[in-house]
Amino acid sequence: MIFDTHAHYDSSQFDEDREELLASMPEQGVGTIVNVGASFESCFTVPEMVKKYPFMYAAVGVHPDEAGALNEETFAMMKKQFAQEKVIAVGEIGLDYYWDNEPHDLQKKWFIRQLGLARELSLPVLIHSREAASDTLEIMKEYGGGLGGVIHCFSYSKEMAAEYVKMGYYIGVGGVVTFKNGRKLKEVVAETPLTSIVLETDCPYLAPVPFRGKRNNSGYIRYVAEEVAKIKGVSVQEVIRQTEENAKKMYGLA
Image (cartoon, rainbow, N blue to C red; front, side, top):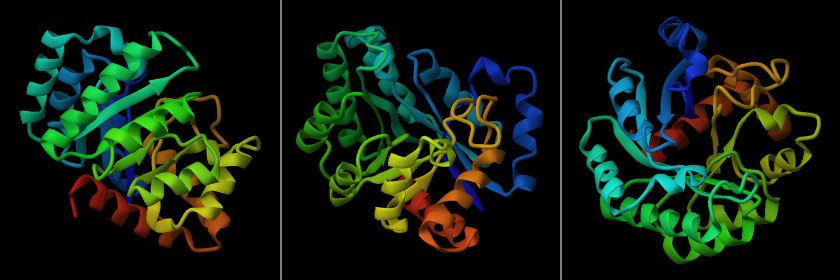
């Protein structure tokens, strides 16, 4: 079944129909969803939310846009959340120079600290990197070796994808691969072995064609699988099977 490796069902965009929507996932062929924290507050709400759904797991971490919420006290509070059941990764962490909500030095500091936390806890990492290619790669080479995880919503070159694959990371592929202007990601998918790709929605964001611009959900991930299959010249079933196997291995659920 389809494994959505990165979703944000704690978003207020799902407040009106969250339970009904999530209940429909098995019949839509979605077997597993990892709901990913981004804000400091979500580090507490997400682990509680996933307890209600047997097919959902949680990742806990603070997004670079929210790095200002972290200090020694809040970092220690966040760390305690990893004792909760079903918390299986550190994320979403990284660098974002596109929105530039927080100073770069602050983003780097807490990115490195959260990578260290993942190493301490032996957990995979979910890496956000936007307009910060060289700094992210530099930090990952210094602090992220051997951790495992995914470069989420990959937006860089096929050459950089190959660097991360060599380091043992997966490439996260979502709705952008279906966009007409998603040429760069299509090239990445073409060049990256299927054994190093995982599927994700990042819902409620980045809905694939034909739903582009609307609220995304895990049921739409089949359109991503179809596009990957088309690019790779394999069946949709093979894409779903292999990416599910990859995701289970990445998250230690195999």
